[in-house]
Amino acid sequence: MKKLVDDAGRFLPGILFVLALAVGGKLLSDWLQSVIVVAWVRSLASNVIIAIAGGMLIGNLLPLPKWLAPGIGSYEFFLKVGIVIMGARFLVTDVARLGGMGLVIVVVEILFSIAFVSLFARWFRLPQKLGSLLSVGVGICGVSAIIGASGSIDAKKEETGYAIAVILVFGAAALVAYPLIGRLLGMSDKLFGLWAGLAVDNTAEAVATGAIYSKAAVAYTALAKLCRNALMGFVILGFAVYYARRGMAREVSHKGLFLWQKFPKFVLGFIGLSVLFSVLFAVFPGGEAQAYLKGRVGAMKNLSEWAFQVTFVGVGLRMSFREMVRTGVKPLVVGVAAEAAVAAFTLGMVFAVAGFLPSL
Amino acid sequence: MNRSDEKKPALSLDWWTVIVGAVLAAAVLAGLPALPW
Image (cartoon, rainbow over all chains, first blue to last red):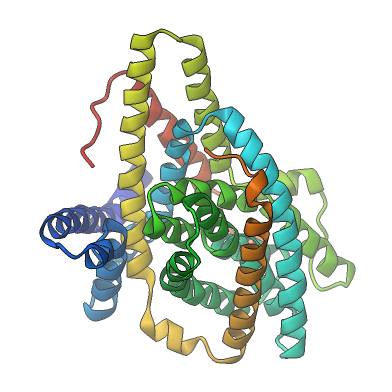
């Protein structure tokens, strides 16, 4: 009980701070949307951009007290809850169809990313494990994959910090660059959403990039990203076994258990709610019941919008200009090359399979 | 980072997100009013 009270005391101030910024950002965005008449300027005042930019300015310009940090860092919790709740919006048959195809695309994307980043890391003579961490970060899902892999391959703390910094710098760049490229190429919501989910490394930044593009795109982004996240365990296991065979990391004794431990459980929550709502829609076909359920899906959608709004503020608050400068040039060069290659490759892939992809 | 040094909580953050998501879904299905957006 005492631990619970201690934890609440540690996390609550930061959580309240982020919640206040999220609500303030949404109100400001709503007001700007109502007063700005020029369409393209109005699109810059979306709730996503206001939340991220506001968080970034506050985080970098104001000396925030240290006791806010634990709560601010908890936005990943809101992100995952938002994704779990999002499951209610998808029919499980659509998830299976798009997810099945997504998994195939994701496997190709992961293999390409890992091969490419490893090659570049070798050319630039980065430490081998830093190269592996970068390839895991670029190939799968950014920060959580890097943290998961660093323990499993016994990477140094500095290598882990470096790899995370590179992923975060590119996450920030993606927020601006991807929607611009998407608009230039006239991409549909479906194609852009899938592309962002395949190519942006960190889940929070991927969802934010999809949301900046459009409300419809973010659903595809989340699904594509979930496919990548779901495969995290297999890739980390591959690296762990590789380094263990070379005597550079400990052996993995129970591979099945290892995979289960690394599996992101919130994906199960997403699928669970998708199944639950799909079953409810199928079991209650009457007009009144369907209308009620549709209203409830709307309520779930609003909850996930708020969870993501908190996430976007957190993403902004975490972007440290000082950290970006400190990251250094070499891993950044590898990062630039890798990200550009993965972006181009995945862009080509989504255009190639566009005709076969089902819509949500 | 040493795996043996990591403190493992009884339930991981991921499981808590599933629990919170399930509780919210139950509340919404039971009639929790929609938040304005």
